[in-house]
Length: 144
Image (cartoon, rainbow, N blue to C red; front, top):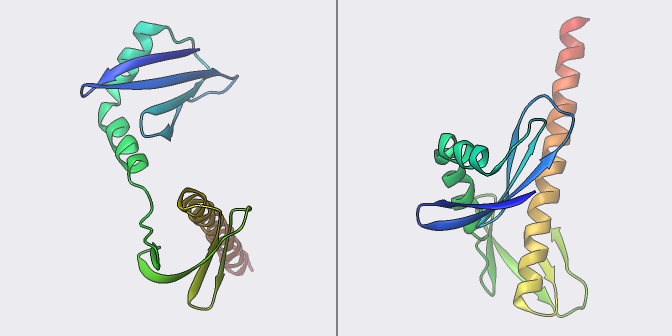
C-alpha cells in the first residue's frame, strides 16, 4: 500500500509493507520517502497517527537523507576525514581506496557520487562485520 502524509508542509510518500513480523520498522528511502514494514493492518488514518506519533524520528531520518555526502572535484569527506580524490572517466561506477587516495570512477559527477555512496555502505558493513568478529572473540575468551 502506498500513501502520503503531510509533515511540516512537506508531502512524504509512505510505502506500507505487510509481513508476518512482530514489530513495526521505519526506514527512510529518500529525502521525502519512507517505508513502514509491519505485521498489523494500516489504513490511511493509522498511517497519519503513526506519522504524528513518530514525527520527531521521521524528521530526523528525512534530514539525514537530505544531506548528500560531501564531494568536491578533488576531495571528499570520508568518515569525518578529508581524503583526496582521483577521478576516472569510465562507464562503471566504482570506488577504490588505496593508501590515502579514494579513486572514484564514473562517466559524470552523479555517477561518481553514487560510487561514493556505495563505498560508504560497503565500508560501514565491513566495519560492522569486523566489530562483530571482535565481540565474538572477546565473548569466547570470557567463557574460557
